[in-house]
Image (cartoon, rainbow, N blue to C red; front, side, top):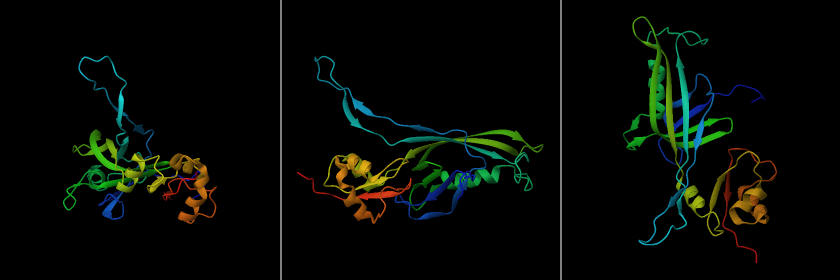
Length: 229
């Protein structure tokens, strides 16, 4: 893809939490890219203390999964080229497809679909937790021609990655990380092992010949290593 080429935000639905089995007709592209999106992070602490004691230092409990908030525009008023109301249903079919991807209950899995949301540097794996739809413009017969959907998503962490995240300082466990902009193998190795010198072992384990050119979104496997004395 050439620099400056328009890329639409994309949501792909999966049946499994390993994001291997795609849902049939389970891909959604936004009509217009969002003006903004919001990521939320929390850290939970416990402030419990023994009866009769003075204030105690809060104790770290856990870091809950990340939250993501997005807005989606649907329009069949004819303002946007190629999106008129020829079928006479306004935006209802577009919203039905959106709901099929992000909201519909999977009878086999007994839960909504797992979702992969990608756009630019945004790479988010999670589940829908909340959605509201506001209808704003109507045809003479009352069919909605424009709507805005506001949705909230909760991060879904695969089991192997969850274990790695909860044991960041253990050299004896397997770790998997997603490369972010600016990441290098020495930098990532230092985060995992506390020592950047292990980057050559990581490069060999992943078959990486040029460790200076990592791609954002790439998954890197960090094997157990024996700490140097």
